[in-house]
Length: 387
View 1 (cartoon, rainbow, N blue to C red):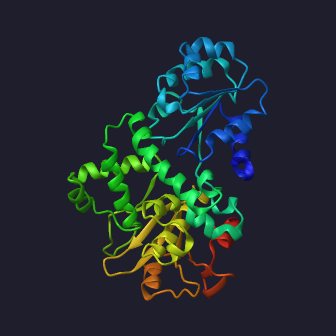
View 2: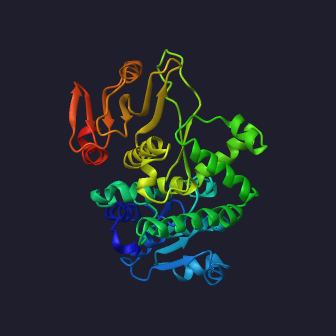
């Protein structure tokens, strides 16, 4: 089932990294297809070895890692779910330096670079990272836009036979994440507490973070709530979008906005099973905004993402900054979007070089010089020209 969608760009990028680095780490949430991608790639390498470090039989093979790596000294070795065996990183450094060649190790982890801190400390200069998310909008057929938005991009959710089975899979995923994955990472947080927080974030999707209010509802301090959200961020569940404050002389909102990154998981927390229920739900606009934000951030990893909101109401959903160039993006769920006065003021406040209003329109059209209304697919397909 998971082979129905070819992830060509990721495959090409991974091959390129393996040709130029001794070790490559694919990082992403569980069940986004990391293992599938790795198995496709290692078929190109004669004698490659794949180990799933969650399986006792594979874990036993590296009980003496130096001996195992020495025996397979000419092979590409894939180590899946390495965050559960952090002691391997110190061994990898010596092996990599001894062999002096690229394409030695392919490492898979369901945690961020911060949680796999050992890699950056012991493998600096030897390890390249490839961040992998669920299916993005350019990896699925454009006519399946609503299915992708509703179900999210996790392969088993998106490719399920129907919406009911998709929602069932996502609910099971949430439960497994809370009850198994978080404890295995070494965090002693009650699953029920983290579940309630996750659900609160779903109901306030795309709003600025109020840690004190969330903490009061959960009987926790604001500091504890921030730590929990950092954990959800580092395990690829939420995105924290920081405010744009650079060179802005106006008073601005300084709390970050919080999004559940995958709209399928967002809708699961809210019990939204089909697209008609989504159309009638109060979260409709915020869900559409988060879908756009996540896809843009995925396709433009070298641009710094922010949002902008002044204390007097001027606002931009997304601000992209790179090397002094600033792109303003406003997101509208209407098929007939009309930019507000606050949009124009915000563009002036930040000194935007260009602005785009993203909406579910059929064709792109200009509003005025430097400002275009377009849809997400058209924007991303024209990335090289626009950005």
